[in-house]
Image (cartoon, rainbow, N blue to C red; front, side):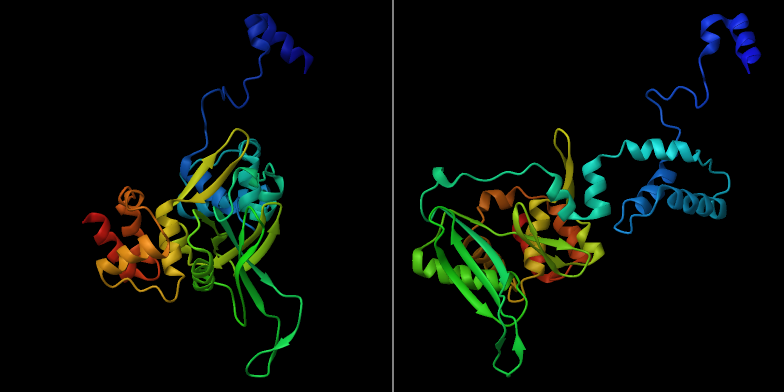
Length: 302
């Protein structure tokens, strides 16, 4: 082995001692995009498949469907995996709770708020057993709104059944009837491909509502910060998801849509008119409440 390097030095000098195996990787990537896309889709899942398993599956797939495609070495894949943003890995492989546990913790200081400026909504499964109207023993749900400044519960309801957007609106109306309209209202509801579930995190309690895979992917955007990244719904997607999962919302006419935006969810007309019509068009094809969202689209294009 020593003789090998001695010959290379005698032939090319110090440059001859540079190990060129793998080539010059600066600014280049020998990974075919379609190969990496398939690997990434297998690796970045809650199943937490190993790099080796995903690599073997990718090789087998292209050997069967496209034998001429060059598959880089296993070490090339491991090197590329190490360059994936670690917060993206947490979110896709270990779940949103793992991501939230690792992200910087922030609190809002209520000292700059006045009473009735900001309300926060939340659900809670009570730690008691009661009988419902049918005599069945259940654990009731509580949906409540709290004033962020005073911590006063401005409205709440106890019920048998699962929390949803309709419950939130019902309780919000109770609070408004008693205390008037707040300047801001915060609810913590997200869509998921898995079963509906709630999680307690350092940021509070988060409600996850099931949505179809096709509708879930419409209107997602990746947001990158200094040392982490996460996926968030665009305002268009958030609005479509809210309508699609509100059982009593039925926007048949333009006037219905106007009332819903201005009175029910208090969205500024100017903000709505700046939304991307293409995302509504995509959602109509795959999501629920297509007719209601089509009415919104007509209003947007009016």
